[in-house]
Image (cartoon, rainbow, N blue to C red; front, side, top):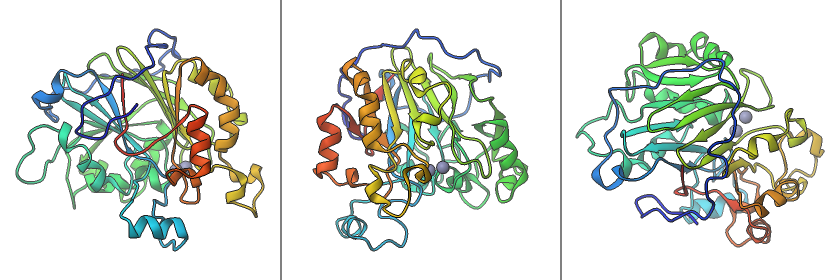
Length: 336
Ligand SMILES: [Zn+2]
Ligand SMILES: [Zn+2]
């Protein structure tokens, strides 16, 4: 079903179910970015737009920071590091490249895109991506922005798409305000529910997602291509708190990458399910199984280090794949 970076794309089995489906009327259309940017090489330029998973785990990473649990120790010893949840959108025809979230693992994640960034300069590429969409202000989702600043890549007017609340957080708090002051980024506000038109017939709609709102609101993303649509909701409260229901968004997508932070309450024995504040994978399997039957693909992403579905061949991982779902990992690709 999936390909690794640099390998040929596999034909995905699910055909464009939602390409023509309705989306919320855009309240704030943002013009596409043009001119400067990366140049795709000949090998990828003929390909349709696609999304690549460049990170799959929760904000603390895997192995998790300072964790000496069995799974983290094993991942460390066997060099089976995973990166924090993030997607790249690759538009081979126009040579554009967009990131969904900027994680603390961004240095390594940019390297997962070297094959699609075309001819790279000898020194630092000051324009490694053409835009970044931010979901919210929790540490795993935006700290990587710092690498676009003065001390590191030093980008110029890198488009940063976010909700107005997230934009205000960036403008009003250091060190992010320095990125704005030095014109490393160009903050572009997009209302939740609104759509941004990009190049090559691809658009991105910000999907309002209920989630703890300490510093900003939270959005997921509906990424629509010429043929297929990918829904990315990596970090959210339980599905019952969605209004309208998550199914309204799933109906528009061929592929969905959904919050799989915790597999079951067994991972957090001292906390109630209500306190956990994420949908449990076991509940999502029951809730969405019928959608899989309808030919849709659903993969879990943003797994916590405690989640046994991170361990290949664990009974919990097999329960997921046995019911037709997938578990996201770095290198998976989905054509749009
Ligand atoms: Zn997170
Ligand atoms: Zn979060």
